[in-house]
Length: 612
Image (tube, rainbow, N blue to C red; front, side):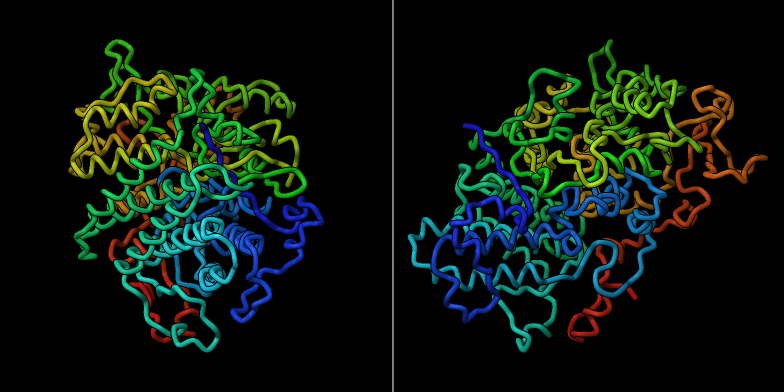
């Protein structure tokens, strides 16, 4: 039996869908530990947990269950594309996304409250701990109460995982505090102790949550195991590649990641694969109702007309940003003669003389992530906007889908949704996919030295089958691009697969952090190849303005840089994020700064190292 789990903001509009005879909807979830009038029935538990969902989805405070954000305008502030600009996958010059570009360039400063969408906010934790202190008061069978207990533990595990990812050591609080509680002024708890509690919570959550769909839009065992898989891979590899922590038990977390897979693989999930190479991957991000893709989508954020809507597609085509050359280069080239998928540096048939040639014979996920010549979605947009002939890429002063790098993101774009206008788009967002669980398992097994061909065929190669790509073997061809890291070629290829499959899904930045690859953020951020002779190509309509040229007064101006005898767009050339202004300090930047007002309020709360 296939299962699906949905997430929806349970605010007033959503709760209003229920019958007015459901009296529990009139009760206000309490934070008062002495409120004996509330904790009576399982309906009270459901209503209270609805408040936990609602608080978790408040993207002005928490940035781990984001989706397309909780309001339409904020999609461009902290949606999938913006969050990717924190990493080496994406570049942006839109002012609303500057916080992400600033962080990636190593130019973040310490502020008050929550800076750069990483809030030091503990309201959610208190709400969860209040539930855990009170749920047993309800007079009902334990089996009826356990799913709600599982929900609370699931979200506490996720909350603390998010805090540790960003801040490292954080205060560990497992009981509800009051304004006079001495714990409010306590010190930070060691990462080891916090993550021990996280593992306990997520294990308990996966035990208490039902395997089958047990309520509209509620998490289940599958979601808990998917989260456990993510948590344990992260912590296991973080400990391995950050010896400065002096935590030598990373393998125990990697084994727990393996254990999570061994449990979830029997719950009925699979990779969504109907045999349509050009649409099955795209469908996961462009389907209005993800309940129809319950084979792969474990947990998703639901958007629905009249309740919660967004503007993802509209902002996809109206902001000046784009994918990076470094990311595009990681999509493998399919050498048809040898039937191998090869890194472009060693692929005999690869060249990037034109956009058409650059995209030819590549992993099909490239053209389902970035706009390629002849792409129907672009053609429809241009025709719809009366722009005349189909042009690609849209550089320089071109309007309607301008690009900073030449690589236009298209992963979430649906023209019919775009036409709905501001705040009216409704396609759902997948939070946990089975594809991620497979990749987590493959990477954990590789790190443990146990990844054989059977593991690859069970994981990575199922994803490659969906897009008709040659299989990965245990002895892949080395990519010179990654030689400096001194890693096994198989680990490099599993990391590549993760980058390609899971891009723009809020994972890449933290992947770089756990692998200790922060130095990649110092690199010059390049876009597509464009030689001077190409400026006269009719496709660009003479709209490319090169820095130092006679018409430099026109905006925007593009800076170019030579590499290996070719010329590429320098995405941030001449800006505050240019190569000569980028930095990454490994003694500081693997953690975020604790806000100044939090330290002011609690003098026992020490700042992360080297943040002033």
